[in-house]
Length: 279
Image (cartoon, rainbow, N blue to C red; front, side):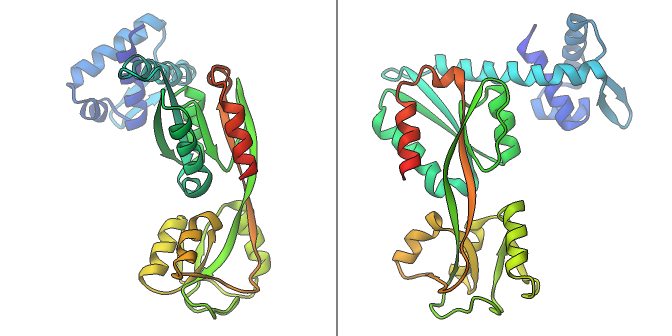
């Protein structure tokens, strides 16, 4: 089975048509068609329903898609591993939720970078759904995420909960009634807890789904928002923002999920987990 044919099949599924897949892969449409036919001949099944409106998966195509993503992910990883420069003998591919980079994400990265000079590190940012899919496909070895369900040969390591604290650019900001309050969406559990605490506070004019964007807005303008303590720490030390006295503090769980096949070759991994839990 040809990896290029599998990659082409995935491109058609992701773009919804053979034309857009050819544009994405920078090849002619006839090449895409030929690759798809070769794959269907090898499998012995029609994989896509081709219509003027686009291409949709057949039942056989739906079954193949998961395997195709896993096989192409492993192929990418294999190419990366075998292309390591001299002096490096292993690679750790790490996926991290963008909100967790400031804190445990950076700790994982710098821990490996400083303690293991023989190891290359490949970093990838993504949503919880992206990270889970990448780990399942084998595109990454471990992920740092908020939401995790172990699938296949994976292990979940629960880490200390993240603290979400109300910060403002003014030291005397109000807990309730701040007209410059910015709502940051920290997930379903936070939404429920926040709604219960601030049930009579009204709706914020500005909202973000990114703590970093909310912090940048406060620094550039004015306002208050709930931010991860690890993200805010440096700016608190510099006197640019202040924790609002008397405001409730929320917590958000996070965890490190690892591919067991990768972890069994890492004698250093238990130590990393211990340091993360002690942080």
